[in-house]
Amino acid sequence: MKNNCVTIGFKIFFLMLVLFILILFGLSHNINNTNNNNNTNNNNNNNNNNNNTNNNNNNKKK
Image 1 (tube, rainbow, N blue to C red):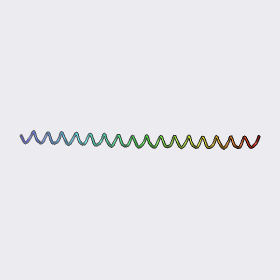
Image 2 (cartoon, rainbow, N blue to C red):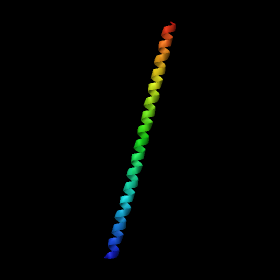
Image 3 (cartoon, helix red, strand yellow):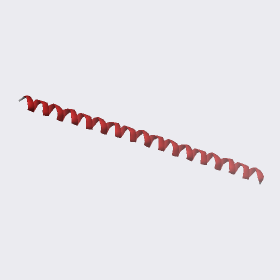
Protein backbone atom coordinates (compact mmCIF):
# COMPACT_ATOMS: atom_id res chain seq x y z
CA MET A 1 0.00 0.00 0.00
CA LYS A 2 2.80 2.40 0.92
CA ASN A 3 4.62 1.74 -2.35
CA ASN A 4 1.43 2.46 -4.32
CA CYS A 5 0.92 5.80 -2.51
CA VAL A 6 4.49 6.85 -3.27
CA THR A 7 4.18 6.11 -6.99
CA ILE A 8 0.85 7.99 -7.16
CA GLY A 9 2.50 10.94 -5.39
CA PHE A 10 5.37 10.96 -7.87
CA LYS A 11 2.98 10.72 -10.80
CA ILE A 12 1.00 13.72 -9.52
CA PHE A 13 4.21 15.67 -8.87
CA PHE A 14 5.54 14.86 -12.33
CA LEU A 15 2.27 15.85 -14.02
CA MET A 16 2.20 19.14 -12.07
CA LEU A 17 5.79 19.81 -13.15
CA VAL A 18 5.00 19.15 -16.81
CA LEU A 19 1.91 21.37 -16.61
CA PHE A 20 3.93 24.16 -14.98
CA ILE A 21 6.59 23.98 -17.72
CA LEU A 22 3.94 24.05 -20.44
CA ILE A 23 2.28 27.10 -18.86
CA LEU A 24 5.62 28.93 -18.67
CA PHE A 25 6.38 27.97 -22.28
CA GLY A 26 3.00 29.29 -23.40
CA LEU A 27 3.40 32.54 -21.50
CA SER A 28 6.85 33.19 -22.93
CA HIS A 29 5.53 32.65 -26.46
CA ASN A 30 2.64 35.00 -25.80
CA ILE A 31 5.04 37.70 -24.61
CA ASN A 32 7.22 37.24 -27.72
CA ASN A 33 4.20 37.49 -30.00
CA THR A 34 3.08 40.68 -28.27
CA ASN A 35 6.55 42.20 -28.69
CA ASN A 36 6.63 41.23 -32.37
CA ASN A 37 3.21 42.81 -32.92
CA ASN A 38 4.32 46.00 -31.18
CA ASN A 39 7.47 46.16 -33.30
CA THR A 40 5.44 45.67 -36.47
CA ASN A 41 3.03 48.40 -35.45
CA ASN A 42 5.91 50.75 -34.65
CA ASN A 43 7.51 50.04 -38.02
CA ASN A 44 4.22 50.68 -39.81
CA ASN A 45 3.76 53.95 -37.93
CA ASN A 46 7.30 55.04 -38.78
CA ASN A 47 6.74 54.20 -42.45
CA ASN A 48 3.47 56.14 -42.47
CA ASN A 49 5.15 59.13 -40.84
CA ASN A 50 7.99 59.03 -43.37
CA ASN A 51 5.53 58.79 -46.25
CA ASN A 52 3.56 61.75 -44.91
CA THR A 53 6.73 63.81 -44.54
CA ASN A 54 7.82 62.93 -48.07
CA ASN A 55 4.40 63.82 -49.46
CA ASN A 56 4.42 67.13 -47.61
CA ASN A 57 7.90 67.95 -48.91
CA ASN A 58 6.91 67.03 -52.47
CA ASN A 59 3.79 69.18 -52.25
CA LYS A 60 5.84 72.14 -51.00
CA LYS A 61 8.26 71.78 -53.92
CA LYS A 62 5.39 71.95 -56.40
